[in-house]
Amino acid sequence: MAEAAICAGCRAYFGYPITPQNELLEYMSARMPAVGGAFVQAESEVAAINMCYGASAAGVRTMTSSSSPGISLKMEGISYLAAADLPCVVVNVARGGPGLGNIAPCQGDYFQATKGGGHGDYRMIVLGPATIAEAIELVTLGFDLADKYRVAVMVLSDGMLGQMMEPVVLPEPVDPASLPTKPWALTGAKGRHPNAVTSFAMDPVDLNRINTQRQGRYRQIEEKETRYRETETSDATIVIVAYGTVARIARTTVKMARSQGIKLGLVQPITLWPFPSAALRSLSSRVNTILTVELSAGQMVEDVRLAVGDRAKTPFYGQLGGLVPTPMDILNEVKRHVS
Amino acid sequence: MSVNTDDMVRVFERPRCLTDAQFTYCPGCQHGIVTRIIAQTIDELGIQERTVVVAPVGCSVSMYEWFRCDGIQAAHGRACAVATGIKRVNPNLIVFTYQGDGDLAAIGTAESIHAANRGENITVIFINNQIYGMTGGQMAPTTLIGQRATSCPDGRRAQVAGYPIHFAEMIAQLEAPVYITRHALYDQKRIMAASRAIKKAFQCQIEGKGYSLVEILTNCPTNWHMSPIDSNSHLMNEVVKAFPLGDLVDRS
Image (cartoon, rainbow over all chains, first blue to last red; front, side, top):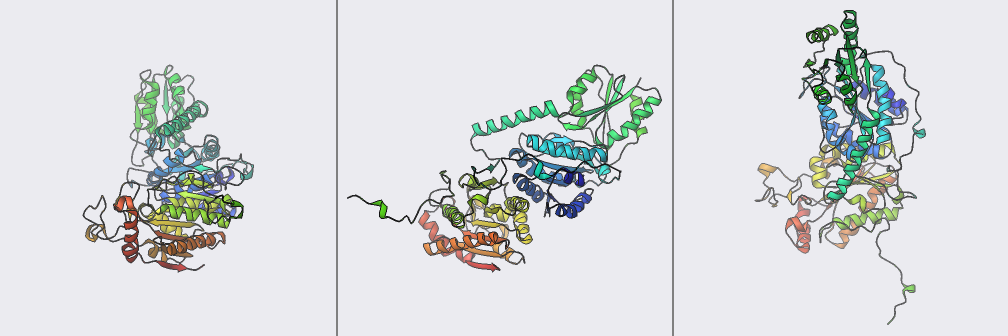
């Protein structure tokens, strides 16, 4: 993911050590100076995200990464990034929580990532890779979407992905100089009016106008950028909804189920926000059951139920504390819902 | 009698790098003097086109609107981290933060100390008025022992609130900072000295020498509940006893 960021033209990284994402920080400490970028091991997650706020405001593609407890600390800065319309890519290699929890894979940060987390009315594009190849693809996409819509983008991975090795093909490196210019960036007010990057608007009429415009941009993102992957859904009677590591495991479950004659399909949301509600809604009229599987006590399932309503059954299956279900565990759960 | 202005020499004017926007400081507050000194310095050094203002949360929250420079508003206490991000990706920019005692020495202690310790090539202007001004006069980390504030109505007691924090002395222990100095604005001589210090701090950055901090002891007539003149006397007679003036580090 670090090299994918460099390929995408990222030239500023600020981070703080936390397991299971230390490898990203360590890689950047050597790689970023080698490509002429900025690297600082910050004194805290709070400082790191605020360094991102500064570097992004100066017009450079910027990234930070952390894991769940550290992401909580970044939430103040993410709210400010959103409010100042600054692009930034934030990688969360999520671990078991709440509190210190543990360093095992977990999906308990879904609410935090997709529903806000920081204060105020804002949204972050949230991308959920299931493999290293997808992580690379989504980091690349993340930088493009962040710049295009001037939003923060979170790549929500987990401790499994963060500690995994897989062969990958890296994208062609982008020359940062070839990226579209950012006329709003702080580059020095030479031959132009001064630029101001701020989230402050004392007058309620002003803040209402600014926030309403931003919500308009969010509606555009919902319309144009919703992404998901369907597997074997065309004739399915039961469908699993899962993202990230669970989606990868569930792909095997689908194969196992099909070999046993169970018409199981899979929907993998790629964008967790915007959530593929319309796809699930349309699917819900064709299937009996939409089973949500997460490494949590049930967070994404709330979005699934909002989308599906009572058009299909919407059971939930999850494991907590860093336990990861096997394909067979999920298949057994599927069988409970197949009459 | 008519005056022939052709023969006159202009000796005083509004700094060119200030916009027409009005400062939002209270009457009698010395923040305005410091802000003006910074503007004059930017003019004198000819750096308006490459200066970035990092505004804090507090009485100077709108500072980016007052300068004809690029500017950014930082979250409370995070100005030094924001400045680090800007300066690291574009070292050609001249980046300064302007922070009060609550912003710099309470909620932003970590960001402020570590930027100093890394020797970031930035200029920090630290306004020490011993109180939270914008929020209505609560106790600050720099509030003097015995000084009343809305959150210590009987005066600050060391037993419960500790002692006024000496931020400049703290970071003077570090190896990286180039220039750390404390000034006050209670008379013309002191204002001139503070002007020279601020100019020197910006010059340190222009010459790539590294981190500098200029602490300015100022008044807060509104929240000290004093007239501007009385607040100035208090500054001169009491505050400077707790916060001695002068250079703490000069490796420039």
